[in-house]
Length: 123
Image 1 (cartoon, one colour):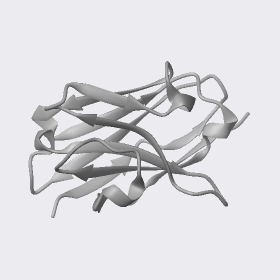
Image 2: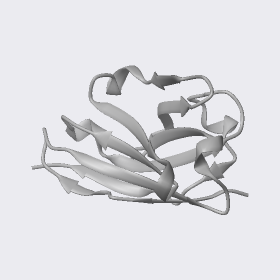
Image 3: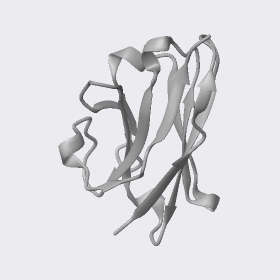
Image 4: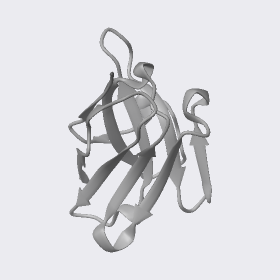
């Protein structure tokens, strides 16, 4: 099974930026559909965005459109989540996930998950 490891989380001020990394092992990440999810304290895990190379599309949750983007570095088998204009309500544990079929923002559709990385937006 594909193994994923997130990194890059931390404390950032409102309006600031962070870039999260999702590094894969055992298999080539380019073959997989990649989703980013987040879970705030006391809330359900929610989809942030999803990207599948064979579709040539990225699907965004409304609350991140215009602020978050995804990119891939195939040479390093890594996917990045660039987060700009961060807000306090973006505070959550962020997870990357992978599957072999179509894009989805539902956590139940993904079987491979990273351990998560904490993002805290506060002054």
